[in-house]
Image (cartoon, rainbow, N blue to C red):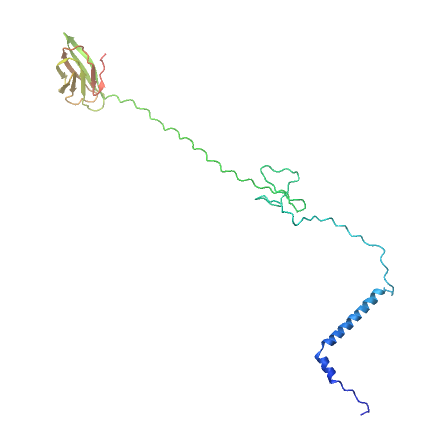
Length: 252
């Protein structure tokens, strides 16, 4: 081997670098920053041919922006009508539709035009009054039925305050009927009475009224005479004469 001796590394220095690697990193970063500033300075001081860039002779004017409308933060919000949109504005014509409420918004807040409010629905119409019911047809009163048995009075003979009279009893029905004759003679005296050509009936008195009843029923459409003899009478015609309640004819 030659007479030269290789230097031996210092054990202390190697140990310091190994225990603190951030020192190496910091030195490298500082060197890179310095190199970067040198490169930028060289680039800015030289043009394409090594000359500095001339300063521009004109500038572009910037457009003027319109002023913005700003509202104070302390400004109270616009009143809101209940049930309406707060962003509605008046129509271009300025007229407000009849029967509709329109809320307004200041210009510049993006009003979208009038928002009509639908009017309240009208109350339901009252039901029509029921038509009056037509009056029930009235049944005309029937005339009283004619009596089925009638009587006709007549004077057959009169003399010296006495007379003989007759009531002709007639059955106008379609079936056999019994009958009753009543006559009133004030103050008269009945001498006798009989039914001509038929079985005899009964006679009764109540005051000045005499009642005569048939002996047998009178056939349909048949007639029979009831005859009587009165004296001491004031007149030859009774004050009342009925057959089954119906007045006798021939009293006048």
